[in-house]
Length: 109
Image (cartoon, rainbow, N blue to C red; front, side, top):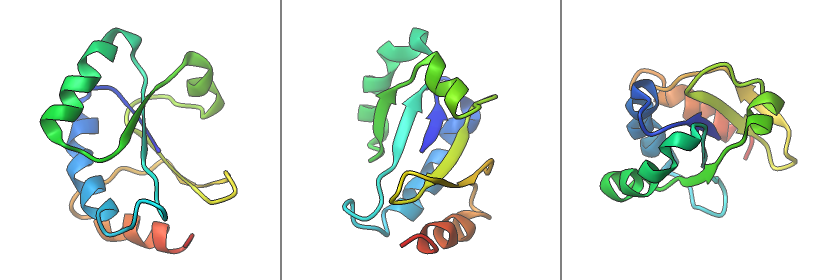
């Protein structure tokens, strides 16, 4: 799960790397949720998703959700296990860390 918004450069920068790793897994094994954190950018989400063809599910965030997950900035990444427990957080993904993301996911399957 990632907290993001369409105008976030670092968010957009890591999305291709997240997508590259996630394509390795069947959708019934790994679900990627993108929580859009800025209500004023809601109108841009649909065109962003259509233009990029990313496969994650964009969801509308709330202030309470940001507080619950202690989001301090974007992107904020979390890997949550099958029981809903946060297992990994506080990481960014780039081309040099795709293997680490893959290993985190593999450790929970």
